[in-house]
Length: 311
Image 1 (cartoon, rainbow, N blue to C red):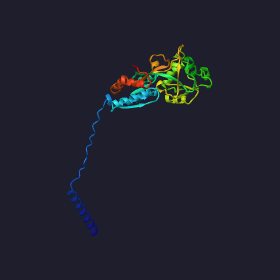
Image 2: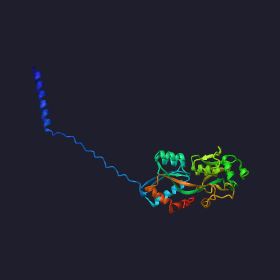
Image 3: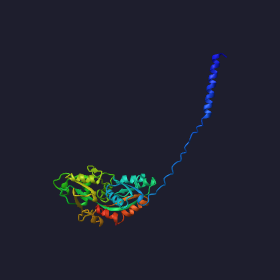
Image 4: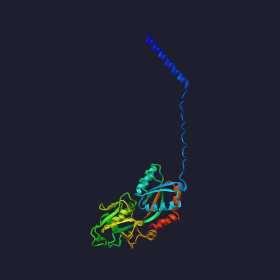
């Protein structure tokens, strides 16, 4: 072996020796593995009493009751959590069916097809009558009409009578019908009672010319701004911006104005029940809420809003 190769081999051997000594002199580094302990699962809290959350969806007619109940109930039960959303009766029942609400507000009874859909989804819709309501027929304040015969009212909304003069309001021109959209419980109730003549003629339907508004407030506003307008709203929505007209019962008799007393005694011909639906019999927070709402405090609120208490 020549001198250069010998020197290189000695250098490599020396470096390896130094490295071995250095490693043997250092303590072995052990990787510290931190044990991950999963957190304890939170206990499942059943909605009982005032601590339960209640979600309520549906009819704009029932909405004033639901909102007033929410406010008063939360004042008495500060930790209660309640969410109330308006809409139409069908939307409330659909939300109950899909499991996205605890209570569905409806201004009409649940339909057979809705009940069937709910049951298919594993939902048992239970009906609760929370108030009674009269559907008020309203016109513009300048309209001279003060009362109307039941048959003529029906003929107007079917479109068989189109001139204001034919119902005692001469000089106003053609009638502008203003009502609710077809998904509304108020629409359904007015159609069943008035348009179909209390169900005697199921083929009768609203005139195609009738405007269809999304809420009671929208109907009220439209009638208040239309001299030839005639519409219908829940009794609790009536205010001074419109004029309420009396309606003679089907078959004849004196015209009766909508009021708490006339709805209660059955003399006003366009009246109905207002509902809330739950999945099965109410339990926990929902049961407590219904006990309160159907008791003296809740029903006093119903009366204050212009509806008729169930008791």
